[in-house]
Amino acid sequence: MKLALLLLLAVTAQSATSAPAPYREFDPMEDYLPHVKGDMSLSGSYKNWKDPANLDWRMAGNPDENWKLNWKFMDPPFNASVHGGHFAADRGEEVFSELNRKAGRMGKFATCLGARKGNLKGLRTQFPMYRKDLKHVAGLEEVIEHCAAKEGRELQNGSYDNSAVSLFVASQSAGMPIKINVTSGGPLKSAYERGRKVFHARAGRLNLACSSCHTYQIGLHLRGTVVTSPYGDVAHYPVYRTRYQLQPLHLRFVECNLATRTQPLKPGSQAYTDIEVFLTGLTNGYPVSVPSERD
Amino acid sequence: MRICTRFFCSFAVVSTAWLSPLALSSGFPTDFAVDPTLVNMTLEPKVVVNSGKLEWVPFSRDLTPWLSLSHEDKRSAARPRQVKLVKPLQGDPARGRELAMARDKGYCIVCHQLPGEQWAGTVGALLLNFKKHHYPNELVFQQIFDSRVFNPISVMPPYGTFGILNEQEIRDLVAYLQSLD
Image (cartoon, rainbow over all chains, first blue to last red; front, side, top):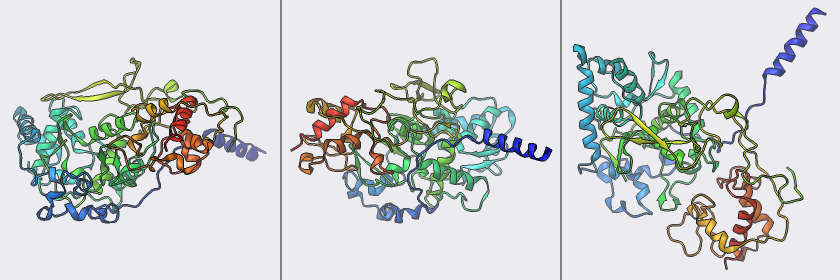
């Protein structure tokens, strides 16, 4: 009798706590190769922009061909003109140096970012990464905010100075291929899978997912713009934009959200970081390309 | 799936009744860029050169009623909804054309080609000479109201179900499309 009562209680408790899962819609979940060459089986445009020596400049500016270059003609070394990204990199170096030599603790800021013996070379290629001190996967801008706060300076994620430091750090890895491991398990793989799911999740007033355009409509027109591939895009952030000054990746997500009438999130939010991990996985093998610009 | 007999049952002009009361019971997700004291609570960022602070300014529209990408957002989306158009159509083609071009209404031109417009989208089906297809008004009305009824993975926004267009506006759009020779 007592056992039966306990069983009844357990069943009742179970049914009380198991509320139905919220109804959400997803685009068909595609598999993506976590390397930039995976674009060959998605848009096929990779062949046009993988090799700087063979970049066909005649395609740039032609609305039906431009997207096939994935805007790489605006990345270094293709774009040699001086633009706002260069000034931002200078500003970033200035702020970085101030933080790094603060209070006589030479190199502490760089060490906090993850640099070995103060050497920033190659550091950008490893982000996002799992941070023991933060106990989660974090992008470079979130870590910059965290490490700057330890030095007593506020560099909010998404702010110009934060992005400028990020750009300066990235510039020390310019030309080095992005290399994050999203296949061997652990927090980064989990974040990649979450990011893939968020990438396909419908949201907002228009019920669109990132993949609704950037997987299934690549090369097609949306009014005056042409949808580009998600592969190889992360390597040039933070990017100089004439309208937005310096734009880190998470503020690009905000811009996308607002354009598709979806409530934006704060830079550094887990959902944005997950998408960043996913897109960085899709950029593996492509060189860090900064300082870059977009229209 | 249900069939309604009068207009579209009790559909409100801008219905958000399908949302679970997340905003009322537990506040917004902590990662929302919002200011709850504003009428339009959604914020957009403003980058200030040579500053360590990111400014946020009010966005022109309140986007909080719709589902976001936040992991904390546990609301449900609106399910596909089948509706029945009550005749007569009584749509205004001229008004329909305005709606097709209006950024905050149909904005059909983003995806579809329409007569007399340059820089049209190519994502959606061609709508030039729409009349020649002889689609029934009921079908066109449902397609605009909620195309997921016909295709569960349609990328066309569910204009009626999500409250973007009201019933008369959809009637006007149907009238406009059916007028395209």
